Image (cartoon, rainbow, N blue to C red; front, side, top):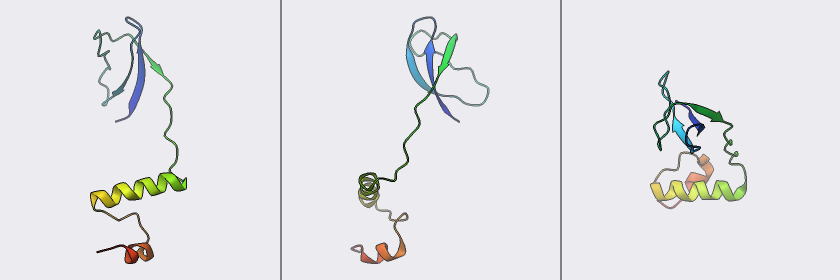
Length: 78
């Protein structure tokens, strides 16, 4: 189920919406269905050292270390 960006032609609202199967999207402001699909921004790859460190800190807070290498997991406090 992809998330699409839309612009409502009736009221001009811009919004994102999760689109399921063949279900039509509707404007959350005016409930209009005359929508124009916009070009969505892509998520950047998480390859910078700062992004990787932030993801690892979040994983440590949540208690999972599955994305660490085995050698790195051995160094973590138990």
